[in-house]
Each structure stands twice: as structure tokens, then as C-alpha cells.
Length: 203
Image (cartoon, rainbow, N blue to C red; front, side, top):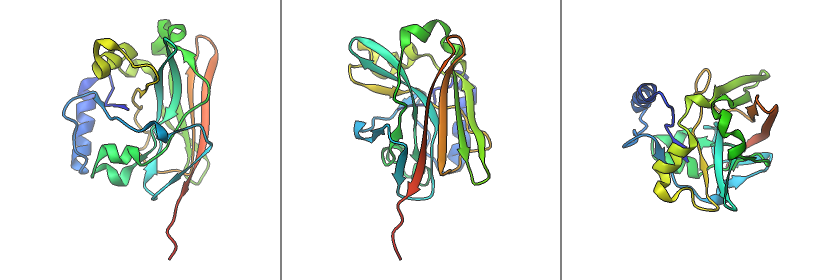
């Protein structure tokens, strides 16, 4: 999972300072890469979480497979209550929902900055826009791959999430999460939606 991937490094550093005030340990450098178990990846329409303080974040991801790099859509669902303890643990404890379809990176690379990520959530009063940004706000795939994996590139079978747009109105939990990666140049979209069910301890 690549984090702090914004191209505007000054804005990224300002956001890190805000999170420090909330008790979240800042990364040693940006961007940062969190290794996670592939067992957390899912295409299901429902995930289960261990507490009320989790939330999704729409991101694109890169997949190396069969000698090609593919682009997909996913949610970095995270336990916010654990973030001040360990960012890696807060991510590892939650499933990462993925859309089923993929695009070849070479097909979208010429207009990469025009691709648009969006997410909508229902906080109890109907669905509202939660995140939205075009990919010109984030570091390009080649840079993230080089920083995360060096000259050898993305290993075959590896998925790397590319970072999330800021949440409109702040990060907060929701029972429903819908996301999209739109390609306005080729007139197509990757989409996925899921619900969140909290596992409650009786008594």
C-alpha cells in the first residue's frame, strides 16, 4: 500500500502535521509503502470489521501479471481507532475490496492524469460524494514503482495501491461505500460497491 502519494509535497507535509496532532505517527519519508497480506484482498460486496471506527478510501491499484501492468480499483479500508497505535496494523486488520475488472496500463498511460477517482458514502441520510480527484493530483505509477521496488520493477503477482484523495468533510465511517475509476477519454469506468458490517461482542 503506497501512502502519502500526492504530487504537491507541501500539502502532503501539512496533512502529516495535522495527523501528528491527533496522535498518528508521521512516516519517516514520503511516499511510504506498507506491506500487507494478499489474504485481505476481496471482491465481495460485504466486509466485516471489528469496531465502529473503520472507513474506506478509494484508490487505484497496479497489478503486475503475465508480463504486463494492469490498473484496477480498490478501497483501502482502514481501522481509524488503531491508526494512532500502528498504521500498518490499522490497514492489515481490514479487508481491501476490489473491483473485478482491470485495464491495461499502456491503454490509459497517454491520458493518465485525466482518470478520475470518486467515492460515495451513505452516512444515514442518503448517499453523498466522499472523495473525488483526478490522478494528476498523485505521483505517477512509474515513480511509485521505482521508489517502492527499484530498478527491478513491480514483481509479478504483486498489487500496489496508489494512494487516496482527501475525504470531503473529513474521514468518517459509513455502512455503505461505492467507488469509481472513470476514464473520460475512452468513455468507461471501473466500479464496485460494498457494505460494512461490524462484528459485535454480545453483552
